[in-house]
Length: 81
Image (cartoon, rainbow, N blue to C red; front, side):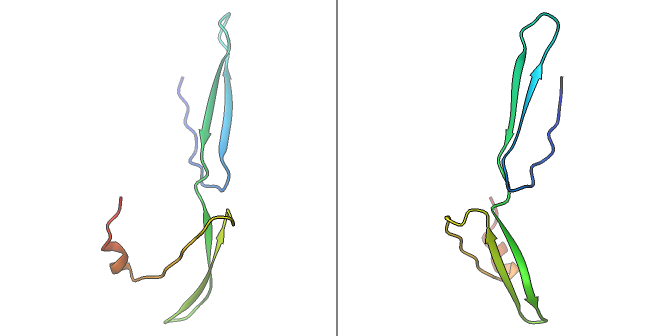
């Protein structure tokens, strides 16, 4: 048996319980679980040719968030992991 779960793109954990039954064999429970992906939304509220304003809306307001706007070349200089 094969199955594929769609990627979780939401704010909440995704969870499914599958019960397999075959003939006289004992049922088998399979748990599929995937963590939430998004931790915040970014909304651009005003933009011009030379500036913009934005707001960050966190999923967990008790966590500390830091935002910074930099040029792409500067950001890319750090590489990725």
